[in-house]
Image (tube, rainbow, N blue to C red; front, side, top):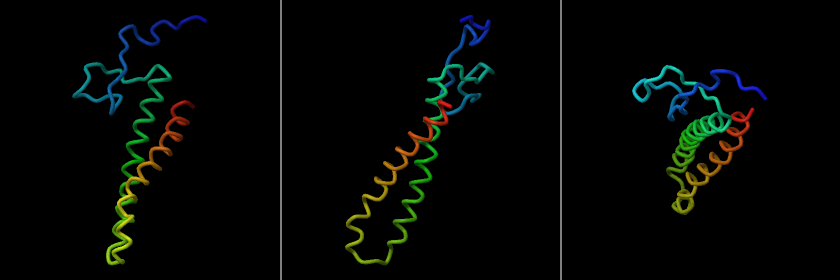
Amino acid sequence: MSRIVGYPPADYVTPPFPALYWPPQTQQLDGSLYYLSDIWRFTLLWTITIFAIVHLICASVALAMQIGNKQTNWLYMGSVPIIYCIVAGVEALFAGSIVGLV
């Protein structure tokens, strides 16, 4: 299999997370990802970040809906954010992997 000249560039370094091109962190203008593992990691990290934020907001709404209810309901409410974060992680793993590998 022949290699395309200049792909990836000889001085290629994986751009740092959180962005492909983030001027305060990088000197180069090329913010491209060339390797499948880099693409998968970048997509997975952003998917986990976004899913975690959305699920924690939903957990906050679920906890807010319990205000004014019986005291016994609050016994189990501490597990709601934990369960939501676990669900977000599993969903993000599948979604990020599928999108990142396709």
